[in-house]
Length: 312
View (cartoon, one colour):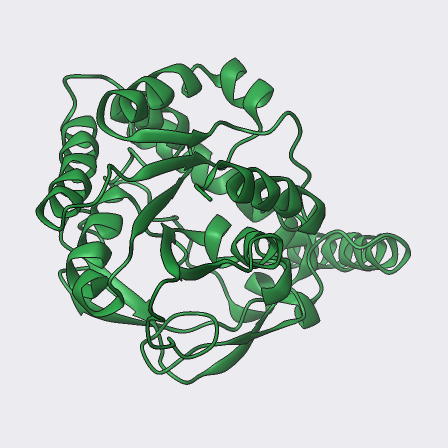
């Protein structure tokens, strides 16, 4: 018993030293995102269930004011980031841009989003941003079917990313071991925690994120069928309202996306069903090493390409 107590004391003593050294390193060079830069955006589920990609539909919590990476995040009364929707003006072409976190502008200020960049570049147009982080192709179709009649767009643009064909989230819930609070809140544990999930998946035979992505891009997979069917729903809506096919804006770093092998099938699907507006940019820069979403400089590239591709 004395040996067990001594061993326990040694483990605690080493753990405290490790935690102290990690916190010292964190003070010199931050090892994780500062709390002041956490996103404080809340969601509301309107239909379906969270883990069912094809059925869920949700928006941000209406009229809330949060933050994303330290930037204000204001939500209008309909549940979307940005100002209240304005009435359609006679003779002004209205462009409806539907997308996910890339289009919503996670990690950047509202004025830096590519839709706002394009609006400043093209004051002759009326561009409305209809996007929520985490949306995929089914949500794009549901958004157009739900809000299209109200907004009456003349042009529909879909901001697509490589993960949009992947809608099966049932195996991607992160796994956390049961630990005392003082351990779970330690900086040492928070740094090693990301390694636990892949280890848990490996030992239990659960697919990894990369494996699920590969499965989603298989032409015979359920995910790919849902993806292409959702794109077809977007086309069907525009055809019913006598509009041209939706434009696809690929919000990716083209060389990096090509290296993953996902870019070509995504582009081919868009060309088969949609009108490709703009392909990926040559270089995309993240907000920081804590935030992988594109920064304002990259959003400017997307915005200028969108502005140049829209008809005059």
